Structures are given as structure tokens and as C-alpha cells.
Image (cartoon, rainbow, N blue to C red; front, side, top):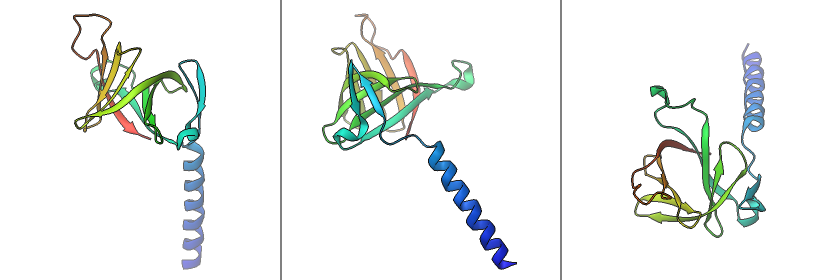
Amino acid sequence: MKKFLFVLFALATACYLTSCAMAGTPRDRTLHLSGDTVSEAEYGGVVRWLAVDKYKSLGNGDGGVRFQVGYFIDNEVGFVLYEGGTSGQVARFYRQGLNLRWDWNNGTYAIVMKPDRTCLYYDFSYASETKASGVYECSKF
């Protein structure tokens, strides 16, 4: 009986690990940023987050991935990717107090991530706009 349980446990663990590895996000994707193509591993890998609607329970969205943000480890150049894809923009990445921040298109757009993983999206193309135009929840992946 013990041997049977051990074999069953071993098979379940192997299946779990295999399915997790297959379901996981690749660690070396090819990104298309501002017209250039770059590998995530090219600059020592990346740190990245997925953003979904913070208030999806209020009917503000379908809960799908709205964008991804991240940075290359070796040079801390940031990026913003559209939806769950691999295309987006190169962004200036920096820490501002305890917040992480990505600015792109000459400061026209910004994403600010707070320590509680709340992401605020800003569109400064309107001179009078100073409030966040989107609120998202980010998860590191």
C-alpha cells in the first residue's frame, strides 16, 4: 500500500511539474519594441508584470490582460507591452520613491506601480489631465 501511494504521488508530482512548465510563460520571448526586435535574455533577462483591471468586479472590464510592464536587468531599460502580447514600446524605467515608473513617447504616457501592485496609467497628451485614466492590478510573472 505504501509503495502504491508513493508511486501515485510521484506520478502526480511529475504531471503537475510538467503541466506547470508547459503552461508557464517562456522566459526568453522575442519582443518587438518601438520597431526593434530584442530577446528578453539579451540583456540579462527581464523582470515583468501583467496588469488586469483593478475593478473588474464592478463591470469595468472582462478581466483580461490590459498590458505588461517590465525592465531588462542588465541596463534597466523598461518596456510596455500591449495586452498579453510581445509588441509594445521602449520606456524609461526608474524608481520614484517606493513606486516603479515607466514613461514613454517623450513623457506623453506613464505607468506608475505602487508597492501594493496597483498600477496607474496616465495619458498626458491633454495638458489639463493630471488624474490617472486607468487603474490596474499587477502580478509579477
